[in-house]
Amino acid sequence: MDLSRRFDFLSQADQLKSVHRANVLMDGSREENSAEHSWHVALYAMMFGASDRAIAMILLHDLVEIDVGDHPIHLDHDHAALAKAEQAAALRLFGLLPGGDALLHLWHEFESGQTPDARIAKRMDHVQPLFQVLLSPHPRPDHLEIVRDNMTRGRAARLHHEWPEAMAAANDLLNGRMVTGDPGRKLRFLAEADRLKSVLRAGLIHSGRRENSAEHSWHLALYGLVLADLAERDVNIGRVIRMLILHDLVEVDTGDVPIHSDGGLAHGSAARISAEQGAADRLFGLLPAPQASEFRALWDEFEAAETPDSLFAGALDRAQPVWLNIAAEGGTWAEFGVTWEQLEARVGHKIARGAPALWDWLAEKARPFFR
Image (cartoon, rainbow, N blue to C red; front, side, top):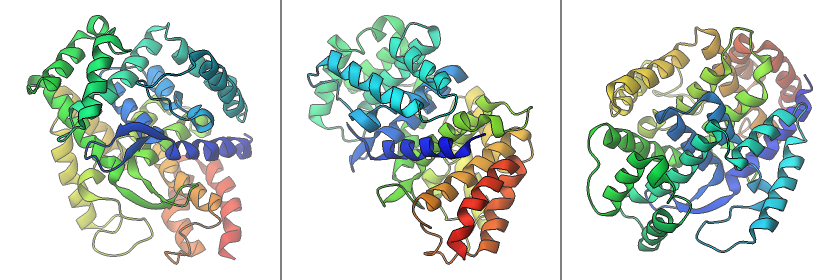
């Protein structure tokens, strides 16, 4: 299984959370980073009917920015030099993985934009920044000008022919008109989801800051791609990844509660369960009926943790914070006074239910921090 090499790759991927983009969050509080952007684009893809393969491309597409950074579309670039640098970054990053050629191929497929899945993935990548600006309650004037230019003569101009419904909605918003009907409901949901980027978790990323729930969800989905062969044979990895993209959306309303914390909203408490159910009712209720039922069913399945797909998804959800703490030399375990017995009971048990080999490996790495 060579998990050491895979977790080296996942640790490298953590650095995408520190790559800043020109976009800002919809509330204008800070710049968006490329990890939470990738999560949001994947959610757009789920919303607009993309395949599992297209979603996988989206999860991977910006990883090269760990080495080369983000290059805003409204600035001039040496495109040949950038393409060469991105190719070198892709070879380095995916070369960390045993069997990384499969993911490298997906990345190349996205970059070429020639297959149906790649074209859909690129559409999602190109419309998310537009609506990031247009759905903001107080968009920056310079960002509105960038959007206008992008829609008329930039990379999004082609979408007037490829995806006229999306561009009609963008034009309405750009000209101060509301988007109504099912398109308006979908966009309202996606705008609400942007708030997940401001929900802080207990875990620390490589830079020492707190992780947020949007970039956590992206990282988990990437875990699903990289660790898929640790799942039982009847697990559908595409469904697992979709669950992980959705699983923390309720935190837009409830916030995150660290698993090792105590109190009225502690994990598994009646108050916490009730708050999350209410948040799910509100958020998924924003969507048109068919998608509201589809997304809510995936979220409910994850929460119930009874099916093979949800057990594996839950195992990854517990495994990723363990690895962040290991990478941070114990991270927040000391902060919360966590004992080995608590880690086994609250975390190890759930990982072992869905991926026993994964817990065996992580436990060996984590145990020295509790001696």
